[in-house]
Image (tube, rainbow, N blue to C red; front, side, top):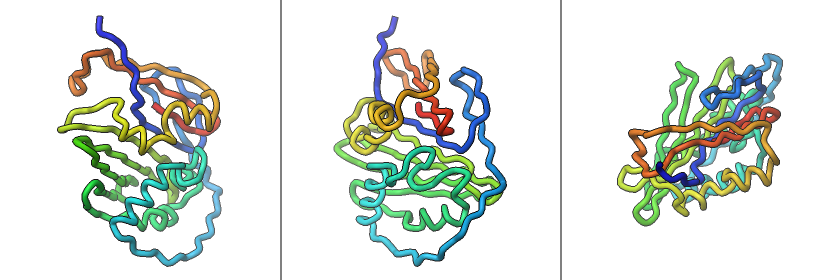
Amino acid sequence: MKPIKLFPVIVLIFSLGCQPVATSPTNNISTQIPETFTVTLSPTPIPTFLPEETERIALIWLRDNNDCRLPCLLGITPGVTSVQERQAHFAWFGKIEKPGFSTGLGDHAEYGLGIRNMFFNERDVEATVSVTYHEKNGFVEQMDLSANVTREHQEVFGDPLLNKIMQYYLLPQLLSNYGPPSSILIGAWHDDPFLKAPYTEFSTVLVYYDLGSYAS
């Protein structure tokens, strides 16, 4: 029997409003966006940032979730933030590459989908932080945040680089900030061909129904 090890691997998915969810780790939280929101846009000049400033802003945002609480993620609240506001909010995020930090981005308006990637390099490992947004009817419908660390394209667990960057989203901090979850689900991944880990892999999913959010 393979041993069981616990590591803080973070995947967060946030959304507004929840319908009942079956207690199965393979089901996602369902969302429904109200159609009565009124948003007033105030035009704001968009500054141009140097690569060093982009990295600094990214780290500040991740340090405290851009000073907002769930279901807000990095300053964007599903069902409240419009597409135009999201565009202005991420306007500082460009394609850059510098020693120790680089970014990647993609927008697929035809699918209502976009992604912003941040790559942090330290020692011989790379931490990848991805922010994905889903949009519908002129509003952000769902926000996803995920992170992992690799060494030579192999998954690394328990590395201090990930803990440093994603401290706000680690299990102890989530419980401290938001209290006990509504439900806790367990998903087991036997003999994962990609991880090839010498132990039993599984995911612990914390569901906050009142926040329309879950963390795995």
